Image 1 (cartoon, rainbow, N blue to C red):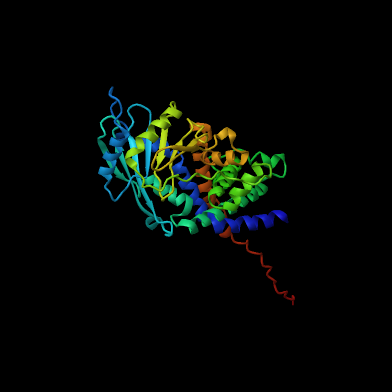
Image 2 (cartoon, one colour):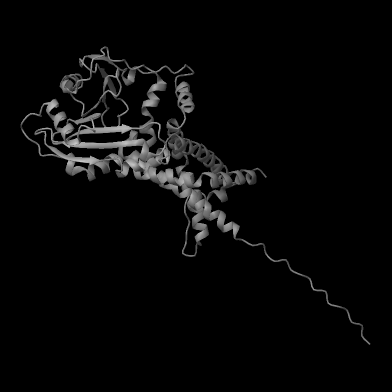
Length: 392
């Protein structure tokens, strides 16, 4: 019977990927409200009293942050929030891309919170082991770098197969069977086995479509071939051609003291944007790259500016979202689709709930298998032959 074969495949693929799927689902749920929870837990460092005086000069703010971080931790990124009463964040990151394990791959990760009015350093935080940083590292690579990313990727592929095969197994034969597949019909006398079975099947059914979307968008970060394929399909079969970022047109040394020009130019070009992220050049010919995120749930409509590392001259602006090919637009939207943030807080809530369901499916599936495994075959009745005695 076809369903028996599908059940066999479903069961063993569940054994192979179950633990990893549980970890992915749980960490995905924990990360769903990351931005909201960060704002809550770090509010003492993120919020400052609003003052009537103008903001301190960008160079003054940078010097204050660098002094607090120390020369061994050069500033690599600046996050400016235009909302009054918000501190400016100065990050210092260093990675060892040749290392595999997270604690060796991330050499250091620090952030300085600076008052934008007074240039006073509110706090310096080591975020290498910050909760959400660790959760994200587990979710994307099991904290094992490239190897972990492949494990996550192939477990996700298996999970998609499990979702499809699970739907085939769930599909009711007739209307009578369908009545028990769409809703919980528990009574006081309903046994644990029945409840567990319903949790696995009914929750899996309702979460299936969203979970497939989350899984397929998650594969973008695990496999380049999948990323290219999705973009090519979205492009209508046309090859994917990425814009190449420009190189700085000077070989002179990088001068962070002149960053004020970059800041003011960005403000002039995007006066109504809430946030600017200024990324320092990492290598000799890299530019100063400024990312201006889209507003609210349209974060994927971000803009990118490239400035010369020495003269701070604007070299070029990346294509705006509306001018990008369909494949590149879809790629830009990927993280918002994956996290549900494209629908705002409602989308994040949906992603949170279905991630919890994803984490529960390997558990309830294992309990179903364990319950069936313990069943013993009913004893066969033995026919006792009674000897016949002759009457005398």
